[in-house]
Image 1 (tube, rainbow, N blue to C red):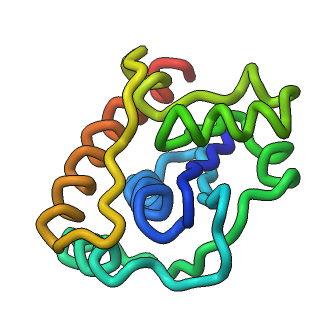
Image 2 (cartoon, one colour):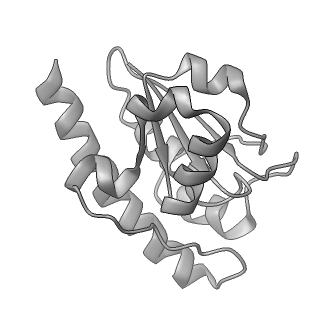
Length: 145
């Protein structure tokens, strides 16, 4: 199972989601992340600090979402409905594998809040939100095996 997490700049939410899922070391699961408007930048300072404080080692440089990522992925999980819609406009063939993270794990049409530019505590809240969603994702993936 190949999963790509997508957010805007690939410096906060999607790399945290990637790091959380990768840290679980699930057999047969490959994960990566990208951004719909990403350049090449390090993970945000607070996102990196939160992961480090959770004992998750993660070396990351942001990168744009490429057609190859969409072709590689079995599941494409976006952080917001607008990310999903943007991808759908450009790659309608990915529609059967494209979901928001919350939609995929719980059916909720809600976004994962963006901590960009926020304090460390805001990043902690986003981490906790993502960790809960990734735990639910893990259960869904394990049930599908």
